[in-house]
Image 1 (tube, rainbow, N blue to C red):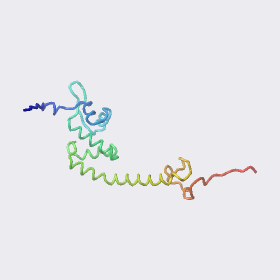
Image 2 (cartoon, rainbow, N blue to C red):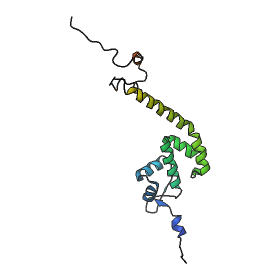
Image 3 (tube, one colour):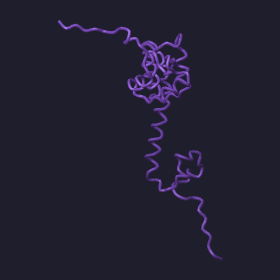
Image 4 (cartoon, rainbow, N blue to C red):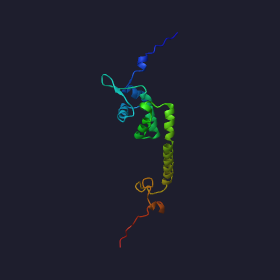
Length: 158
């Protein structure tokens, strides 16, 4: 018979900043930044070292997932603020919040598709000018007259 001893005290012990960083796959500087931005909360040990509750792992995972979707830190902060008492998001919370991001994702997808279409058309335009490129200069009125130089003035000697 195999006997396994579980130290319940250590499984509930807070994580050091290094432990949280390793388990969450982020740099310790990112955790300090998240804490400064109010996205996660930690405390200090008797020796003055940062430590975090274990549920901070889920908050960091939430932050990283939201960043991967393209949300800004203010948007992530606002989403986390909707959770009562700053608790960790549950599956239901994630479903509600991620559903509210669908229009943002749809708009980003549409913008990327439009960019892809303009890039394809741009390859053969021949302007060779990043300053005049329709990707960088979408309000270019002269571009409607066709590709290439339109306002080139060649002075001839009289």
